[in-house]
Image 1: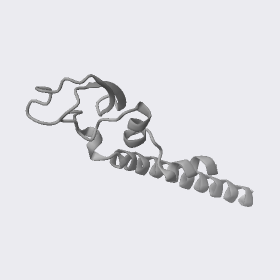
Image 2: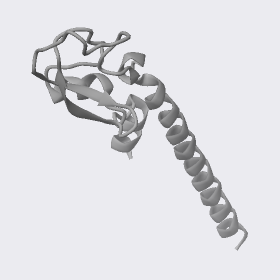
Image 3: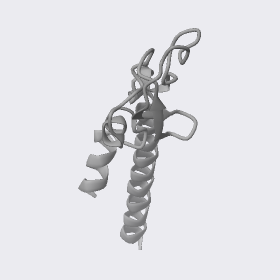
Image 4: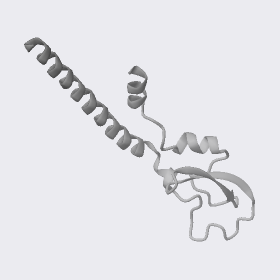
Length: 112
């Protein structure tokens, strides 16, 4: 019985270590993914005091919306654009997608 009890306590210890490790990686991954997005993804699509004043083009573009955390279609006037304007939604997502998992979390998921 003594041997069996010690095996159970070792298994519980291993489980605690694994759970703590997973929790730590998830917290670290969350912080990493928030800081991983470039600052320009939080910029408005246009810059300047009156950005639409003389801009008369009608160009379909995509911009990252930090409130919805998604790339949304935007009609761009052709001037005073910020770095937060993209030709395609795919390009916008590649630069600004906050749901990208870090390498650490991907490795943990695939390993176990």
